[in-house]
Structure formats: structure tokens, C-alpha cells
View (cartoon, rainbow, N blue to C red):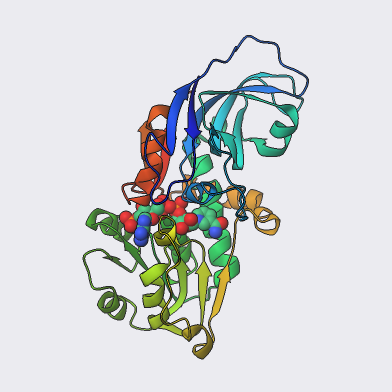
Length: 348
Ligand code: NDP
């Protein structure tokens, strides 16, 4: 049973084979289950940036618990039930290990109370034909993040300008497409010309490569009416530029600050005063909060329809083989993923 093991916090970027590595253990797939337990074959692992935040000293509190040293890494997963002694799960059910608590290993023997709290049956894809990976991407946590973040915290009004950073990523590409369905003028930034092309294919009104273009000039050119809503996935200098171009009474959605996750110390935003002088709302949010998760079923239903009708598209980078998980984690922080980063562990 190959497992993904987290060892200890890195000082900067996670080190492949050191901070995160794979290792073999044994699991008896024929052993009888105790009451409530389930045996899973894991199929899909979701590689999400917040994983880096869990690689910290457990004494430091945050919204998601720190990973235990030298333990199996946890995150969102899709799995099939091989055996069940739990009335909530049947053999052959597709399940999602969610809120970051599925196990990153080939097979998981999950205890009853843990299974009850952290796994949900998600047999939808058996009938709608959508890829299983969508249940940790567009129809999973990143999708819900985009939906709740933009609608609840962005308070969008038709005709407004929305700017989104890391716009081709797991969350960003959905933010932009939802923005278009709401009648917003949508601009995105991304880290390569291919990614910028993709944003234009998705119907973004403007897109630019923040690594090669002058960000200030591009925002002036592409957002002639200023920015009403900034969906911030990266923080740092991009946030400063967005503040420079923000309109009075604009909304900044603090979704993530990936540019800061592997740095030591925090970046000082030079023009935060604009929050006051431009009367901006600056709302940070965490999708896992109960009041945001409450939108999950409504979101899955709505978004499944959008996907089936071809109204919303979704790009993924899928790597095969659980042994490639440590590299896939690092890749997300280096911008090597194009769309949602997935590890395919096994097929159904
Ligand atoms: P992505 O799929 O967008 O992958 C991360 C991308 O971030 C990379 O591909 C890269 O794209 C970009 N990036 C990496 N490093 C930097 C950097 N130093 N500066 C600028 N951009 C960088 O990830 P997600 O869509 O899953 O997550 C996007 C953001 O949303 C993250 O900050 C994440 O933490 C946050 N998030 C927050 C949630 C919440 O509840 N608040 C829930 C889910 C995600 P590029 O090539 O364009 O640079």
C-alpha cells in the first residue's frame, strides 16, 4: 500500500522526497472490518495550495489543523468502497474524502466515526458520466470556493469589472466563468502565455501574463473603468496593483495569498491605506466554514448542469501514479499546473 508521508515543516518550498515522500506499508485487504468501518480503494487525490499551510508547527493555530509529523498526508480524495460494515456506505459506492481529511494512500481502512464525519457518498458520476476528478475540482472544494467567494463576498452587479489572479487555476478559471454568466467584465492574470490564451478561450474580456508584462500598464489598458471586484488568489505585489486600480466602494475577496505560502515572514502591502480612502470591503473567507459549506449541494447541482450544458469548462493537469504526489504538490507552488492539479491513483 503506497502512502504519501509528510515528515516535517519545510523552511521554504516543500522538498520532494524530504518534506513529502512516498513509502510502502502493508494492509490486509481480506481482514474483517469492525462495525462501522469501511475499506477504500483511493482513485483520485486533490492537490491544493492550503496543504502547504498544514505543513507547520502544530503549536501554530490556523483554520485547518496542522499535519502530524511522519504521518499519511490528508486532503480531498475520491475513492471506491471495496468493503463496508457501515450502513451509510455500500460496496461499489463512490465516495469523497473531504474537508481535507481523505487519506493520501492507495488503500484506506477508515474507522467508522472518521468515515461518518469525513466521507460522503457521491455516486452522481455513475449516471452523469463526468470525470471523478471533477468531484475534487469544479464540483468540489475549488468550485465551491469560486461560487461562494464571488457571489457572497464579491456582491457582483451586472456590468462591473472583476479582476482575478491565478485565473487559469482550479479556483480562478471558475471565478471568471461565473463572472461572465453574471454579466461582469472579466480580466484575469496568469503565469504563462498558454494560460492567457486559455482564459481568452473561456471568454475572459482581457487576460495578461503577469510574469512578462507590466502589470500596472496591463491593468490600465484592460480595466479602463477600474476594478470593482478583485478576487485575490495570490496576495503580494498583485494585491498592491489591484488596490491601485480599485474603484471606490470596491470589494476585495481575500481567497488566498499563494505568493506568500513559501516565504519566511509576511509581505508588507505598501498601499493598504486605499482600503480606507476608497472605502473598500476586504473580506477574507474560508470555504470550509459551516455557513459556506451550506451552499455545497446547491452549488453541485447548479454547476453540474452548467458543465453538462457546456456553459462552463474545466482544465486539469492530471499526473498518473501516487508516487508522483510529492512532485505534484511542489508543482502547484511553481505554477507548473495548468488548471486543477490532480493525481490519478487508480482507475475504477
Ligand atoms: P491553482 O490551481 O491556481 O494553482 C496555484 C497557481 O498559483 C499556480 O498554478 C500559479 O499559477 C499561481 N502561483 C503560484 N505561485 C505564485 C506566486 N508566487 N505568485 C503568483 N502566482 C502564483 O490553485 P487553486 O485554484 O487551488 O488556489 C488558488 C488560491 O485560492 C490559493 O491561494 C489557495 O490557497 C486559495 N484557496 C482558498 C480557499 C478558501 O477557502 N479561502 C479554498 C481554495 C483555494 P500562475 O502560473 O498563474 O502563476
